[in-house]
Image 1 (cartoon, rainbow, N blue to C red):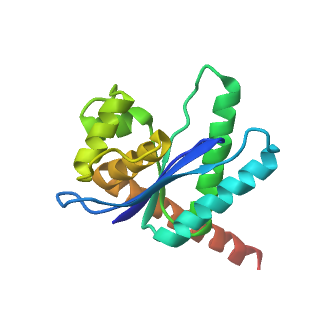
Image 2 (cartoon, rainbow, N blue to C red):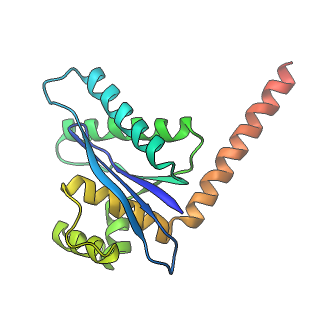
Length: 182
C-alpha cells in the first residue's frame, strides 16, 4: 500500500509518502512541505497548497491519503488556517477518487510510539527507526506527515475500506437520484 500523509497548515503543509504493509518493512518515498508566505493573500495561499498537494499526488500515485484531523486549538486564526488547508487536501484526494482517512494527532502518536502523548522528539526518533533512516525527515511538518502515512498503513486498512464503501455508496445513491429525474 502506498499512502500520502498530509499534515495541513497554511504556512507549512507537511507531505510525506510511505509504501509498505503490515508486517513488512516500510519505505519512505519522500517528505517535504508545501510552503506559502504569510504576506500572500489567502486565496493565493490556498491555490499554492492545492497545486503542491496535487503535484505530490500525481508524483506518488497513492492508494490512500491520510490527513491529520483538525482539532480545536487556542489560537483561532491558526485553527482556521489549518482547517482551510485540510479542506484543500480533502478536495485534492476526493477529486482523484482516493480514499481519505482522518487521523488525530494522538492516534498517530499511539500508532508510532505506543503513547498518544509522545512529543515531537519521540515521534521523530520512532519514524526514523521504523523507516531505517539515519535521522527523522525534516522539517517537523514533513515528519508529521510521514507519521500519518505510517499510522494509516498500520491502522487504516479497515478505515480505508469503510471510506471507500461510503464513497461507492454515495456515488450509487447519486446515480439512482439522477436516474429517477430522467
